[in-house]
Length: 176
Length: 410
Image (tube, rainbow over all chains, first blue to last red; front, side, top):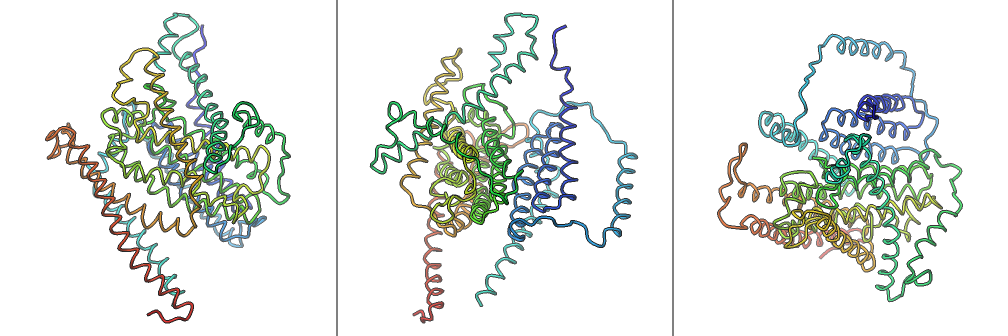
């Protein structure tokens, strides 16, 4: 029998690699003693999530995930860390005296999440994904979901103007 | 690509089933594309030194081989054999990861470039966004290098990179939106197909100029080479790097520049299209070869323009750069997106989901002429506004200077 590469469970292998990235990265974020390393672990974790989107044939979401979270947010976080910390801020402890207080809350949250995941029957469709998801998304945004889409745009504009206003006020105060 | 697979399948070999041939084609062509881009570095460095030499009234490299062609090999051997130094207080893991990430991100962009009709690595339906997303990884690599070197100059270089990339990414994405609207798709292959009638550079000249300026800034080449301004911050983010790791940053820079030339050619100059000849309808390899030659001529013209810029323009100051980006390029590109959207909607042909625009099919080439006129109008209006604003802000600046120096402004 000839070797058939389609028999290799590529999707499963990629899924486990991506899961390792996402979960390993997330653990790294909260356990690394170095803040800069934490931010880089966050990039790894977000990369894993982008991989999930690719596996789910949602190429647009995957690329947007990379562009927004890795390309903009993670880089801004790194930027802020570089500005705010000593050049090599090492050996810092991420825990403080209140860790015992947050432990039960986190455990309850975890239990609730596990409960939700186990009780909800996740609908799985056997249908193949449609060809051009970008076009479908565009029609959805400007069709049935027009109002939420516009509300989000207004929210973003407000945030943008607010950011400019805050930055501007400081400059004027310094000049005065 | 598909024709090649069909040709191999026509042998009817029992071992060569379709999935295997498909896998083999990926295994053969992916390394070719991935290696060809860094290999072009040899030609690019030689070209750069020759061209800049001529601009500065020198000969450029002329000792090793005919016309100094082997100079690049000599440089390569030198770089490979140099001592590889890691600063004592550097963050070793990140320090060593950064150059690799830089090279990977620059090579990954080549996955979506359509080289000839029907041949490209991955015809993503989000190809244009993919370029931007991968560009973010390159920024990350520079940031990692700047921080992990534990050197203040490296850190300053990294700060400048982030400030610049964030600024110039916005006009770049805006022009990509314009191209997407003109082509009706974000796939690179579809963008090339859509230009079979008229190249985007004719209908959208302003979008091309903004794209190229923002692109040169993203690549970090002169006149936007503040990230490695040697007279101010030694060498910027790669100050501490030596030997092959420095070489990898150089590879990343040249591959980025090469990729930008490819994007400019594909998005605005019709990619593999040859003027007045429909290459894609030719059967056999002749059409493909012609298309590739046409694409490479365009690409190397852009490479030449970038070297020309480097040889003739002085470096921007960082505040000028930020002002130009935020106060001119961003508003103009936003304005352009709105104008082009309206014009394209006016001429839109009706289909099952959209109503035909009021001007569709009225005059032949109407859409192209209207787009060109709209572009020129945006240029005129924006330059007019800028000149008005510049005049008033100049007064303000003069007043501020006078106030600092204690001279009454009259």
